Length: 48
Image (cartoon, rainbow, N blue to C red):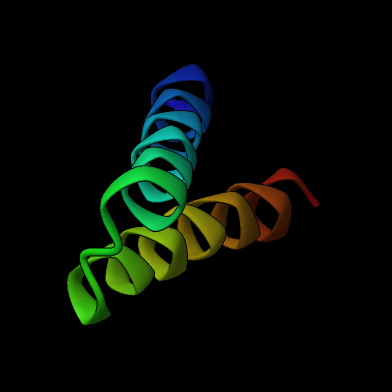
């Protein structure tokens, strides 16, 4: 499960970077960043 969360987080961060720097998709792209950050935080909390 932990590899899955990291994979999703990395995917969301890549999508955010592409959308933010190339297309400027606005609010939707920032939601992808937020989802990636939340996935990493959940992973870090569950490790302890």
